[in-house]
View 1: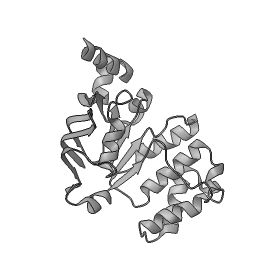
View 2: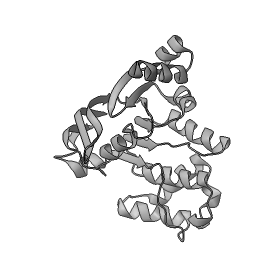
View 3: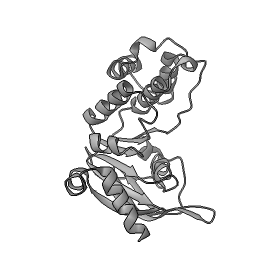
Length: 234
């Protein structure tokens, strides 16, 4: 569970997040939507402990991100929009490297289980530089999940992926236990996997509702999004 209270983040004079508050419940898939620059990626990077913030509070499973940063971050897995990998390492070498950084016991068993689930087990001995975007996304997802975090942050997890890879990742999101937060432009992904959606505009939360409620009211999440946008510009 992640609780965010009155969070503000500035880049110079630009306010990326303006006193926003969220409660991301356990066992929910939460989607964060908004235009480029709305604050989606900034929010995820803050929750992952990558970016500092100007004011507010972030509590991750009862641990303050400012007061108990190391403990809080052990409860987080983070997949960035554009993962950075070591092209000369094989997939297996990379995952064992991540396991060593996290001092994971039974690394071999964990790698076998997760690569089998994501369908990439047969490519582990190829160099990462030869991987397709979808394969890199799967390896990055596994690296974010190896320590079994209760909270998973995914930034555009299916962007640019072929349909089979996208479906594999969607299935993984649906089946996992814990809290999953997705920053995305994909209204289809929101409809397929999310329980709740927040819409950010110019650093502010302008809508929070259950996906099924919005679908009943607007038929599609795309309609709900543009209705919300129209109201902001009215």
